Length: 241
Image 1 (cartoon, helix red, strand yellow):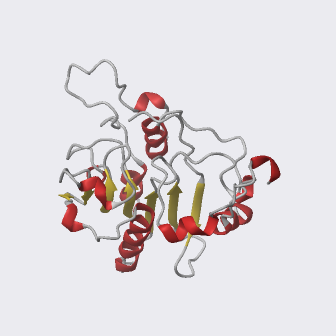
Image 2: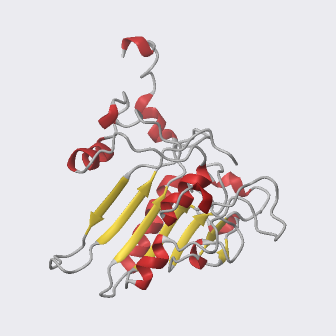
Image 3: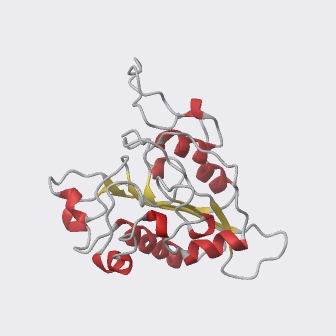
């Protein structure tokens, strides 16, 4: 699915769970938001408070002239490979050799592949959108563990599985409706899954975590308790905020 735009944030946060010597490699957490507008964060002028993300921005580096590809796959291909948009297979016309559109080229090394070769353990949770075949899925492109939405977008709730088709996958296992909790919500699920992987990480190796949220991409859905916090916020109109 082609997106009008995606601003892939943007926070490359170097974190550590213990004290490392100067020569030890850091743990790396890469967080991506899907279709997030420039002023959708409080640190860039949003009227809706985003205190946790604002703290990351204020204590880190804000890239105010940073640009991404205008479509989802382009941005993710560049982000995972460090290459230009030629690294993602063009969608039209179909390639005669059978390669699918919207997937990362197989002759391009990915960040998780390079980091794993350098001794990292690699984990992913969230939207992939760089290929749905078994040889293009996250675990085939460098991730040791992954919980991924393989395609471009979906409902943020569990009803996406109403027809039992599988677009979510954990490692190499396709997921079905009953594999997810009844209160499944994408943002919470991706966060919990990444925390699960990191808590199970018990070796001396550093880790690379990639959390690719589908929010705030359409459809605009949140649990009721999150929505209730902001009811009435815009009732008087944007001009009075």
